[in-house]
Image (cartoon, rainbow, N blue to C red):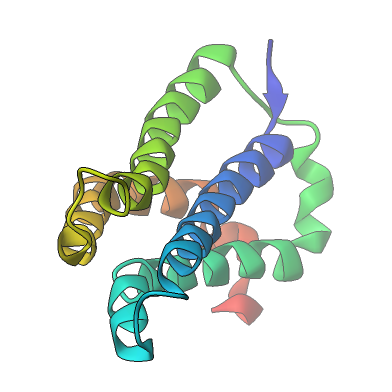
Length: 146
């Protein structure tokens, strides 16, 4: 089964963004009643900067690449390629979503959450930076987006 390049880009970009915003939502859910604003911001600051970077890159693709998107409907991504990408990114997304569940659960220590999220983002950061630069290259976005 193949996917069009556009569908693949939208799928991966949406998955990463939903995961990051979901992580922020989980942190808020677990902290809003038990912590003061500075503690909550400390937790969220572990994932917010990279979420902003992903959101901006994805937004640039959606907004500035409209004219170029028609050509992407004719290009396809092989099943092996998109399944591999999805598996690695899925593992990353699972780690990002499980971190707050573990640290705010009965066995976790929530003070370690920012550090662990930073480690997860760093480990996968190089891979995701490469993936995002491949999925949403400047050539697709055009000069007006730079």
